[in-house]
Structures are given as C-alpha cells and as structure tokens.
Image 1 (tube, rainbow, N blue to C red):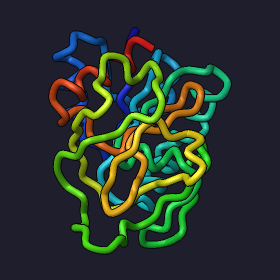
Image 2 (tube, rainbow, N blue to C red; image 1 turned 135 degrees about the vertical axis):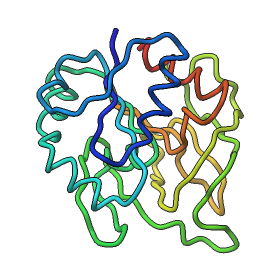
Image 3 (cartoon, one colour; image 1 turned 180 degrees about the horizontal axis):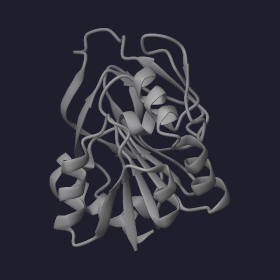
Length: 202
C-alpha cells in the first residue's frame, strides 16, 4: 500500500509526509498527473485560497486524473483542510469558484457572531456516525484546526463528525471512497496519527 500526497503548490506536504513516515507507511509526493494512477490512495492537502487551489489543480492537469482515480478506479482519497473543501461543489472565498464536486456542498465564510476568524487551535469534535476512518478514535477527541471557511449540511447526509464553533459545522465528511477532514491530522498528535493510519488501512 502506497499513499500519494498531491503537490499542487498549496499543501503542507512535509508535515503529512513526516507523519506517514513516522507511521512506517509507504508514501510519495505526487508532482506529475501521470503518476496518480500508481498509488493505492491519495491525500489532497491544502493551505491557502480556494480559487488559487483550483487554478493550480487545472494547471497541473490533475483534475481528470483525480476523477479517474476516484470514480472509475474507486480508490480512496482524503482531503485535508482546504483539500476537504476542494472536494465539495463550490466556494465563495474571494469569488465564486467551482470545486471538484465529489460531495455536494458549498464552502462559506465563518461569519458567525462572537467568534475569532480564522479558527485556529484545538477543538473537540463530536462523532455523529462511525466509519473506518474513525476506528479507535474517541467520540469526543480534540483535533487541530486552522481555517476561515466551512461546510455545513443541514441534512447531515455526509457528515460523520462536527464541532461547535459559533454554530455546528462539519469536521469530518465522507461518501463511499471519498473522505474529508477540516482539521489537520498531521498536527493533531495521537488522534491525528490514528486517523491517518486508519486511512492507509482502508
């Protein structure tokens, strides 16, 4: 099992790679779209602005290969922070931008009352439903967040865990072989490492 870490110029690649190396899991940073098909699973990291991220994915010809990987090959993908937001339908960050649309939903600004933006630091999550990504993770574990935008689905159809930050927002989402986490598991100590290890073992 080898995990690819997608490099589209906006991810915290070294931290994710170091975490996987610590776990003893085979991994490699993916710079060329032609190499995507070689991996058993993919991590889509992300730090920065949504429009620029989509632009970079297109520029590196990643999108069609990602679609093939996810929908035709049915292999697992994990979006982290901005990477999670990219697997959704659209974002209003800076301008209206179409995302990958792997899971239906929109990304919006954290404009709630009496909260700090960006949301930075440790927050407790509440697990709503279990999946393989959450094996051996306590129901109310803490994870490290750093974001100014969020996704929330009132129907909770694809939400596995949420947190309360001014209101309830999604922390973990999934649909079939597609997973997303709003926090940074690579910075979340034991719980984050457990989650990454669970992804590798899916």
